[in-house]
Length: 281
Figure 1 (cartoon, rainbow, N blue to C red):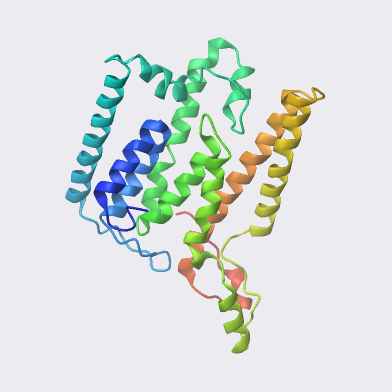
Figure 2 (cartoon, helix red, strand yellow):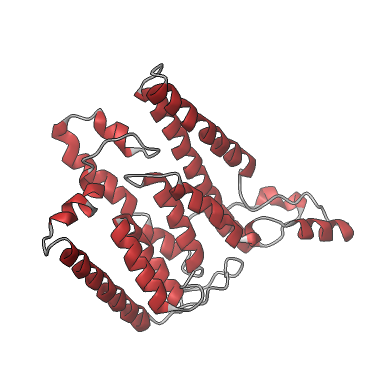
C-alpha cells in the first residue's frame, strides 16, 4: 500500500518488519523496489520495457538493508545480545523442525521422508519457492504491482508454515485489478450498444478455480475435525485436503498470470477469440 502511494520509507520499513516476522516475505523485495521507481498505475493493457531508475532502486535497496539491520540489532538486544533466536525463528522456515499439521504442503512430505534425504529436499523446497521471483518480475516489468500480486499467490501455495491468511490475502487482492474481469457497468454498457454482453473475463477458468477453492474450504475443516477431534481418520485425510488447497492456489495464480497477459490483446470479437492464444516465447 505504501509503495503504491509513493512512500518509500514507510514501504521499506513495513517490508523489513514483515521480513522479520516471516523470512519468505523477502521475495516481495524486488517487485516493491520496482514499484517505488515506477508508476502504480496499471500498465497491463500496454506493456512496456522497464523504465525505472536503477540507481534509485539500488538506493532504496540500501535503505531496506539499513532498516533490516536496525531491526535485527534491536531484536538481538531484546533477547540478551545473543543470536540463537535466529535459528528458532528464521531458521525454522528453512529447517522445518516442527511438523505440526497445517494447510501447507511441507509437513506431511517431510514426515514421511527418510532423514538421509531431508537436507537435499529442504534445499529443493526452499529454492523452488525463490525461483519464481525473477521470472515473474521480468515478465511483468511493466506492472510491478501485478508482479507483487502474483508472488503473494506463490507464497500462498509453497510457504513452509502456511496459514489460511496467506491464500486469503492473494484472493482478496483480485479487487485491485478490475481490468481482468468485466464489471456490471461494463456489461450494461455493452448491452446498451448491442455488443455481446457475455464477453468472458480475462481469467481463463474462473468458475472451475472458484469451485476448487470452495471445495478446499469445505474439506479442510471437515477432515481436520474427523482426524483430530473425532479420531476417525488419519493424516492422509487432512493432507488430501491440503493438496486440494494447493491445487486451488495454483489454478488461481495461473489464471491471474493468464489474465495479466491476455488483457494486452484488448477486446476481441466473438468469432476471433479462438484464433488468439497467450504463449511464452
